Length: 358
Image (cartoon, rainbow, N blue to C red; front, side, top):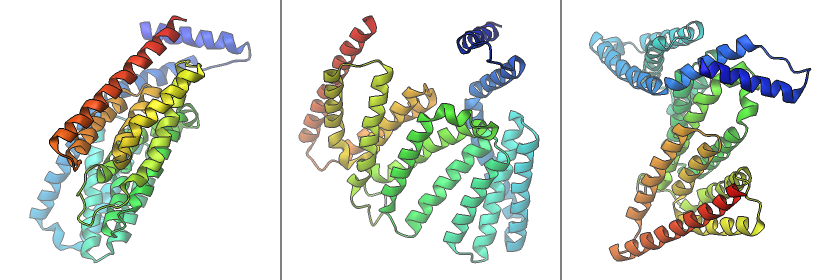
């Protein structure tokens, strides 16, 4: 009840500021507001639904293996297409959380069956990956369900990474990271425009956002963990050409929101930020994780902040572990970095606190 009153008060404030010509559908807004609150509170349940769907998929595929379906390549392709169609139809017709586990299970089973069937028919791996990307791209457009859309983003990302690794174009990972980092930043910065662009965009925004966050992290692992690929990735610093400038740009937006107007303070913050990020040029995963944290802070995306912090800690630990220095040198580097971070915190806390008092 308090939330409804708070919503009405906000609408009245907006109406008064906009003037007599401003009109709104109070019933429709309250309905969408209550529905969005339900969706936000059930995010952990949605993640469990994805895990449950994956486990159900593995169990059902095991049953099909015992039943002998894998002996028919055409049968697997046909059943795969049927499962995918049923999953999309369920998501389009029934908007209930309880149906999500069933639909995502059917969707994953369909993709697996179609993949196995086409693979046994000796379809080229690259063509198969492109087909999965097209299916995953079209599915959310037909049925913009949260779990289906989120899973589709991950499937698209996984197949793109597969294409890069399978064709031994390892250094293309830098271009891919740059595209995702830039796209994710634009996605966060244009949140209001995307949500209000239409009903389809408003439904796809949240699942695509969290999906892009996971996609960026999974891509950063390739440059954050040395020796992950046998042939290796050269020019590790190449990804930093995008991640560091974009991170500094996001910091400038944060400073504007925090009403930091003093030029000397801003220049000092930029210099300190550059000095902190410069040693991470050989580990773009660190600046990439920091970018996720800043973007999540900018739009108050708590799940993204948690994911960014966890990945940030991991990538720093991995960077420290991969340093070709003695243990003493590593300790000195960590000690000096810690002092620099503490000084940065004290300085920003003092300056921002002074601005808040003013």
